[in-house]
Image 1: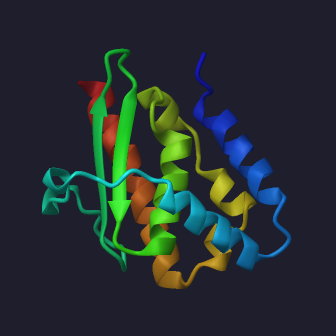
Image 2: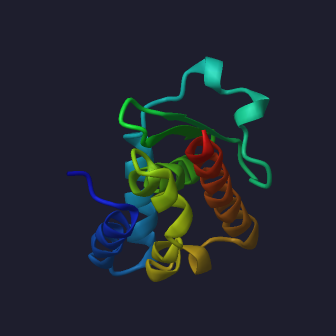
Amino acid sequence: MAKNVAERSKDIVSEFAQFQDWEARYNHLIKIGKDLPELAESKRLEDFKVKGCQSQVWIHAHKNAEGRVVFEADSDALLVRGIVALLLRVYSDAEAADIVQTPPDFVREIGLESALSPSRANGLMAMIKQIKFYAIALGAG
């Protein structure tokens, strides 16, 4: 059975705990981003662009056959691409209610929010907000 959002969040916190400093964490985020599949050009539309991000970020969502919300996303910036990939590891292929109801505590617990510039931190919160909006919309459908 797939892990829920809270369990995935704990896994992320454990994963990042192994890195001693933010340079190592940034490098890990960039590596995660490089492994993210590229988003199809047909989904790189203005409708899927996250508002409030310094970089270009696109998030696309749909429900799979099991009724779970699946996200695809990409960014034109290397570090942000890693952040997007991290968010997808936590939220993609999860129940809509689970996505909406589980707070993004892992962001604070791994120190990501405080390590980012204010504009990047705002962009991160905009991405999480967009993910939760998609979950609400798809959960109602």
